Length: 113
Length: 113
Image 1: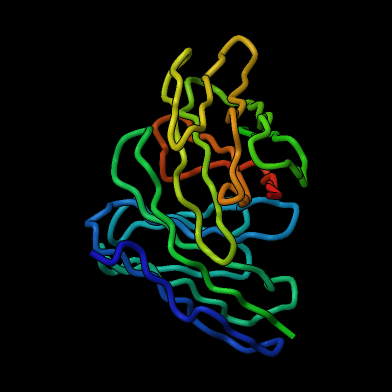
Image 2 (image 1 turned 180 degrees about the vertical axis):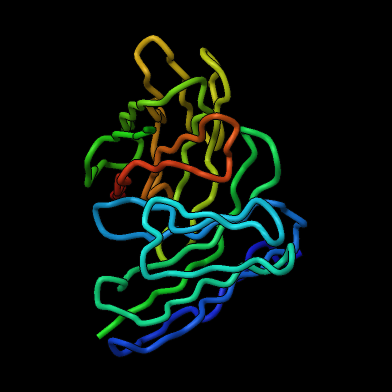
C-alpha cells in the first residue's frame, strides 16, 4: 500500500512549455485534489474530483487542467507554464465523510524560468 | 466563504517549553477542523481533528479543542521536543465537502535543544 504517489519530485520548465504532474493513489478513494503551496500563502486548492469522470475547479484553477479517467489517477496539466506557477504541488485523496482524513503525496517542486 | 486565520510565525522555543499556536475560523454551518503537520521535505500529514463543538482532538501530546463560541481551534502541547520542529497548518472542511480543505497560512515551529 503506497498511499499517494507523485512524480516527478522536481521539475524545471521554461516559460511556455507544457507538462503533466502525475498523481496516483491505491486506497480506492473517491475524492482527489490538487493544491499548490506558496510561501506565506498556505495551501490553495487548484482542482478536485469527486469520482472518475467528474472534476471541478478550486480556488486557483487558471492555467491548469485536470482529468480523472480512473479512480486511481488524477494528473495535473500545465499547458503553457508561467513563472507564477513556480510552486510546490501536492496531490491528496480522501474517502467519503465530512471528517475523513486527507492523505497527501510527497509533493512536486516546480520551477518555471 | 470559509477562511482560516492562524498565528504567524516563525515560533522558536526551547525543548520542554509549552506551545500554543492560535487558529480561528470563519465558516458556514458546522465544519470539521484539522491540524496538519509538514516535516521538512515532506508532504502534509494529519496531526489531529475534531468534528463537532467541544470535541478535543489529541495525538502525540498535541491537543486542540473545537470552540464554536469563539470559532477557535488552538493547538497546544505541554512540552515540545526538537523532533516537533515542523510547519503546522490549521484547516477546515465544511458542508460535507471534506475533499475541499481550506488552510491557514501555516506556522513554522523551531525547537532548540
